[in-house]
Amino acid sequence: QVTLVESGGGLVQAGGSLRLSCAASGRTFSNYGMGWFCQAPGKELEFVAGISWNGGRTYYADSVKGRFTISRNNGKNTVYLQMNSLKHEDTALYYCNALQRDYVPFGSWGQGTQVTVSS
Image (cartoon, rainbow, N blue to C red):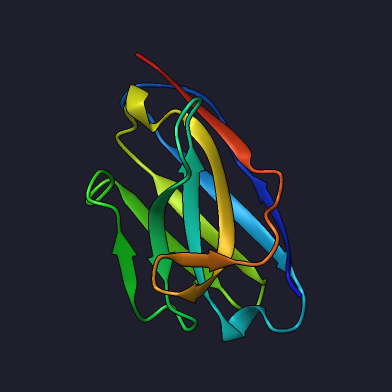
């Protein structure tokens, strides 16, 4: 079982940057692909970015390609999301989770971290 704690969110102006972190507990962190997801008010949970177990492969939702970068440090049991050129429509609660397979989360969710982009 992996426990997840997201951090790094905040209020930023459009065009700004944030770096989200997801700290995972549990010895099996490095066995799993990891992903970032977001949920805006009144909307469903959406996939944002994914990374393979060793960091060798990354993939993104079309809406964030070229602006967001996912990475991981297995030695620190942490996955990151560097968010650049933020837009108002990026405003959402962001979560990380382990991936059962590409794009598909499994396991318990953390509390998330709020990203608010002012226009």
